[in-house]
Amino acid sequence: MSQRSLLVKPTINSGIYHNLTAEQAGWEYLNFEARTLNLNESFTQFTAEYEYCIVLLGGNFKVTSDKGDWETTNGRKDVFSGIAHTLYLPRRTNFALTATKNNTDIAICWVATDEDHPAYLKQPEEAAIEFRGGDNANRQINSLLQPGFDCHKIVCVEVYTPSGNWSSYPAHKHDVRKIDANGDLLEADLEEIYFYKTDKPNGFAIQQVYNDDRSLDEVIKVHNNEAVLVPEGYHPVVAGHGYNVYYLNFLAGSDQSLANTPDPQQEWIFGTWKGQDPRLPMVTAGMNNTI
Image (tube, rainbow, N blue to C red):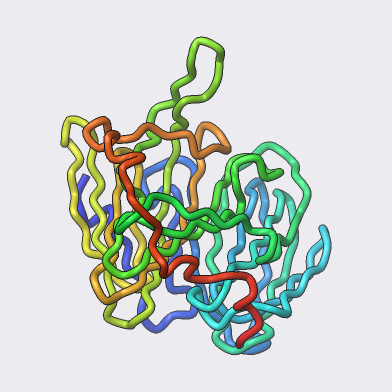
């Protein structure tokens, strides 16, 4: 698999600046879209046989649907100005989404399903915050559609990595479904999208995607609004020095889970950290409503 097929660049001069189907990605589950809307601009859609996750990256929106109506009033200027609102919509839902602020920015994931789950708008203050790692491998994870959320397959988190820090590290993979003798899940088989934002226009991150036999081994420089596809293998990230990095993760596959296996060559690093990065948390729900 080539680097070109893993790095997805945005469409220039288009409100819909990403639109990637599972077929285009060459996998089974994840479909992805990102779009911006001007004030009062709207679009309508039918979810058909898919469940949807809509993440508010910036601005505010209101949604009317045959499953309920919702409106965000405490959105964020951008991803570095608060925590996301996350709207889950089940299959067979007609909805209309309207921007109530100019330059409203949203990301959408949809995954085929044969199950029915309740629609739900998750508020920023409901998102659990976790600091993972330590020292210069410290980062903040906000759980949006966390494992155990009442849906079928989608998992969604947003991750903040301070300038110069490592993230998704020690590296891990989730490409083979493994269970132990008691039937407990050890590793899920998941597809994953990393969708990036940087706090400065010329910011960047570097991501590696590799497997054990190195038949896949790519190092990718990623910029603002670009995405990386992770169909298999380990996938660590480092934020370029001087640039804070955000990425939104959408995952789906065998289980609604984040069960994974660390790279055995890096597993020794767990527990060796001496402290936490004082720059964390980078965002809180208290920062919302500053737009």
